[in-house]
Image (cartoon, rainbow, N blue to C red; front, top):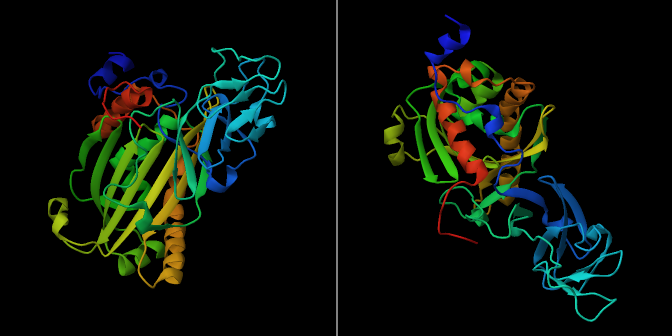
Length: 356
């Protein structure tokens, strides 16, 4: 029996590597709010040159940077009122992308229009969807008001692996015990709250011998419920609820966690095959407490240190990771299910009524 025939006996239906797009069709963090102002800002993203600026009333605008006329870079131009002017011939485009003025003639061509993109501002970040309208709103932690949270400065890693492998970590139960000293104590619960989102909830025992794990058990709890939701492969929202209860996950709704940490992970391709690289940027949050501002800032930075150390082994192990769907086993079935879902979600191949 050949090796490939043998692998068919443990086929878990994982998709091939070439099933994924170079750039997933999801929300991306574009820039910090203070980077986008009245001076045009050029950014390279999802294989295109973009230009960003703010209108007179402060609304962020993003459109293709290559002028419809002869392809000059609009980010080298200037903002006049709500329009951006091309540095080559002075053609002006409004926030809709439509050319509204051509100095050399009275009527601009009706077909002269730049591709514009859906943008949303939340907190101190500006996010973009690679289309004029987005098929779903900018996501966030479930049932959480952004104003309730305080953020630590983000940290980031550059990984030598394709973007679509990064989100598998949350659905890879095997690696938690080996790489993180976390023992799974019940079968994870997986659901899709939206066609573009996949959620997994799993509870682990913190069983490591490092000083961080000893301190985690003492100050936070010996069990942690990881609630992870991935949106289109570009954004992941993780809530880590720590507790000391012996209850299994089905009873945790009645048990208030001792400590909860919030982590938003941005996933962005940096280069495509064959030398694929990806950027992972993580922002850690905690809930604000009335009258505890200084301690909240200190506490969220401590959480940032612990979570960065927790994630570091994953970034090292994912470097140069090699994926072959025929090499997955039954224990990888949740990972395979995630990857099958991701093929559809990252291509935007779903139909919903909501638009923004």
